[in-house]
Image 1 (cartoon, rainbow, N blue to C red):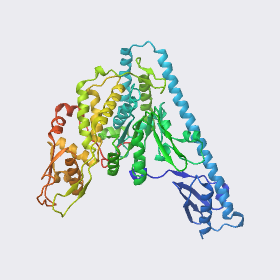
Image 2: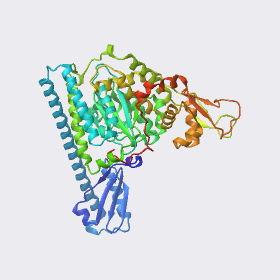
Image 3: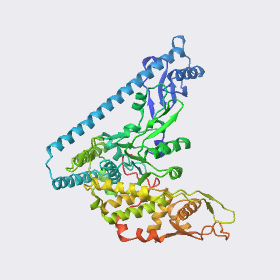
Image 4: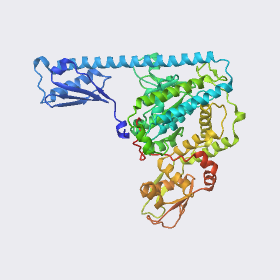
Length: 569
């Protein structure tokens, strides 16, 4: 599915009643707020139709029918009667959809309660199990999950699932009150959303395919405060893992809507709730601590989103799918296997593993959140792992910093001018990368971090930045630390202006040196070759054998690296 296709509104196909069919209508569908009707006369009627304001919408529809010369309704089937029939049909369709939604919600609640009951039963039956015996079984279940993914031919699922589980486990660590938001980026059909949809049935999750800024704290007139609290999404996020499998439409929204949503997200990621004002309801919201973790998925992040996040305060972390492809014989072996069966087998192994994590002997159920929590053993944290987190935070700050640049071709000076960059203080990133490492450690059965938890942090840092910067940094690390404009445009398939702009950004953000230097008084010809070199404070440790081993050959994929050998989103 392309990013354009994924941003389309949901299509509502309406089942026509006998009366409507007798009038000659063949199909009726609503896409967003556009209603389209087809008629046996080959006429097509379209009009705006807001399902939340049926009376006004029916009037628009009636006028559209009257205005179409191809449709001739006799006296017994005039447009007014058609409007009545259509309203009845629409109301019936909405009622059926609501009934199905309520049935699905009830079934989901029953599935989640069943899992909770099974966990409580296991916790009771295994109350005397030793930590060592628990760990032995954990390893077996962990490798059963890994092998299930491998045997079902879904190797690209492992990385997003590992990331999703690491974020989930942050909720199970005592005294973490800072929400964490992580977004999986990957080409279409790279299984980035499967790790999220699998956890839809797990307790303490909140799943939605679509949401808006206004849905977090509502200001609908005519509703009581209790009704509004039931509608608001934010309180339902408390102490849960929020799963947002399709964020591409959100990130491609209109500038005004995007800035509003990112601004609200930035605020609630402080963990202090959110209060807003409107003319309809005045001031309302939640002035309280709201801890949650959020995992989403998108094909790519537009450059304007990075800029907006930089100005608002970067609090979202990304991980890109690894740039890899399955061998031809592996692809051949998986042809003909039902994807649904593969997914169910992996889900069963995943849930078996998660249930075991929840009954760890030294975990205690927190009374307020109802979540099993573990106390962190800070004394066992490996110092080298913590130092890596500090270094990675120092790299991340300029990598996703904001630098306003503009082309100055034909003027006396360099090709691009710039303003003073905005680079975040590293303290928050240090805390969040440490929490991510801790979540990963707990997903591996430990309550302390080691170097084994650093690879996922490396992947996040190398993924969290505008795609052009990520690409150039990767090449700088693999090609000795320096690159020219011609090398960048030739190897990365990006235009010269984009290459020059990104080279300028990396330089003013403090990651690289540029030759000729920025700001020189000499006239620099537009076609003159430029060269950037990664600064020694980054190059020296990023090119060590230990870092290379921890990185594990990770190369972040982009939306142009589409894989066509997988199923799923």
